[in-house]
Image (tube, rainbow, N blue to C red; front, side, top):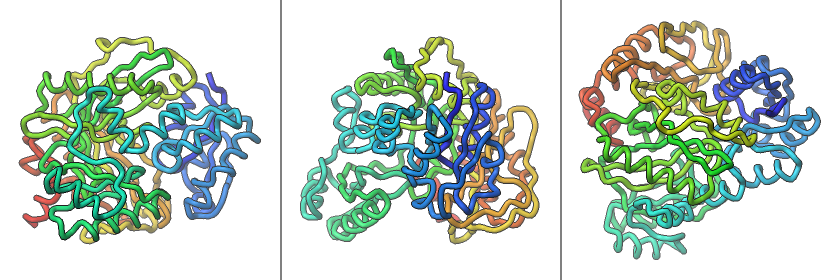
Length: 446
């Protein structure tokens, strides 16, 4: 097992990884920007090093600085967390060239599955259903041609997109040119790659994802599924495990499809296969995330397996000792992402946390890196933490989340706690029949 790991990230995920490493007896090295000198992960790690200025390009995306620190501290592996460099195959390749393990799949697999157009083709080869779509588009004129073949509405997707960026829905021909140019500019600026393709856009569907774990011997197990349909502008806000009102027949088929795809590409460590599921429970491959995800926590609460620990173990060559039949799924968990944002404009907020009270009780968890008097900087993602609850039934989990949200207090920085309270009381959410259109429906009622 690795004796020392460098965490190439910040905030909640860096703290989460440090805690897992501590329990495994692994020493940790933190890297931080000049804006994060007082951040929790810098004090929790065994060693901490400043690698640049507050902007991510100068620090958390500074590949040379991160690898230099890893080598000088004799770190055997780098854990990228989520976001930042977690799905950057070139960074993973550089780690390998420098004799440092990258805690994730092989960089060749990352490159293949990170390009969504190639991932679609791999899904087809694995006999996983996909929606009608195109290859990489040459220009807006070809986009119009392909859209008319698929039928409107369609969705333009940057092949290197993520985090809700590089995506536009096009409902009619006249919108295509502007949408094409917008996706190109946004993708070029965010990912350095403006290439895109289009797919048939499915409305009022559920966004269901399957959490997998795979070892280097070719064994793949499913740890559970999640419903991530509560979204705003393609950004997830609430997740639950398992997905409500999904039949066991469809769940089994989706699990089998996820395993087929993972085996087809030779996947290792932790990953997520995402699907869109219609009202009639037809499902279609959406994408594969080759990293730890924000919402892994709800799956952990249900299956009882520490996903971060097993990500580290499988990256280090450990085989999975348990069978699919050993994984439990008789509880229900819900996660609310607590974000620093203006309640009306949804713009990110920053400032000093003056009062913080975190709810407690059995099976209540708040994964975060904030503390009282912490100053939330303006340079990074707005998520302050994840409030997670787990109970024996979904109804109990909703009641537990309502209670936990009412107990959660954070003054000094605007946040979205009230939004989550509203969702927990929404009739569509309570029934489990909500879709990716829930947020839009809630906005119309207001």
